[in-house]
Image (tube, rainbow, N blue to C red; front, side, top):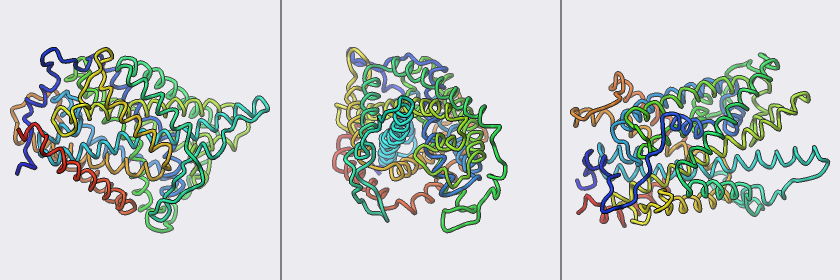
Length: 485
């Protein structure tokens, strides 16, 4: 039963307390900062990278329905996150919530899934960033009548997955992806206030570009591109309703950012009020943008032509009088993807920080920089790991694994709310999930069902990740856990 020992809620809530002059995280974020963090993490790869792949290979014009399905699942999970984040304003996110409700081994499992979510997400988005950056170099070079293109060997992954096996591609490294992860990690190392300010500026830029894109392309929407709205099925997960559902698991990657807001709870000025606003506000705004954007994209270009690393820019290439907008979109995409990498790189070190304080990973991950007051060791580790992944692996493998880890974390949070409602009904809750039994059960069921859809294609990689996680838990974490003492 020691595997399922739970950490008292009071103990979790007190993790930020300073002991003997210890340096702690800095409370500096307002509700506006938190909404911006959520939008910064959510609006990015979903629009600028994943939408085209999901439409071209799975859902067709019905990608709109895929976004609705994924958004509903996220809405259920978002309500549950909001209740937990207001009640337990700590940096551990779903990991801490699981520790209080389902026990240590489940908490470790979810923490390990969050490593997959945040670190791999930063790497995935960096690969997409590289595609838009190289496209922008081509555009600038063409304008000046010269070539600024980087060698192909330095802009793509040297490894790919074919029929479940790793194969070499002949490339050396994805250099732009490595460069952006390194730069973002340096900003995150410097401080939460600086990171939030940079993110807020980037959010304004990318949302402005998205609105500009929709305003100028709406007149070119051809409704015949939406017929058939759900293409005839061509096999498992390819079009038809099965493809729409598989598309929902792909675009679910687009929503992973909103839970990153919860990792900043320990740095929020008034978490009981601001955390629900940050989580639910950013989720609502982003869902509306995704649905509108996916409808416009499939309206101005046949869906089967959108399966490129930069589908938004690709959609504009058929309209010579809109080529000026293509450069602006590429700049907006670069800005948007940068903010996603930034928020993901912010989130994971803070989860490491909490896990370290609980004894499940080495103490060095719990160190706070004496001047910048950031978890600097964790930031460096996450940055180096993301650099390696982004430089070597392709986007399709990384994206599916991120979605799977996120879905498991979301399902656990939904279940955890119900358990804590029963075991600790006396706890003060600044925000309560409405109709909790229905919302929580539907949220958990939706997330687990989407997980199984993606697991069919990636079971080898996910199983290997889980095995590595449990080797670490039984080899180190269980014996060093503070609850073990």
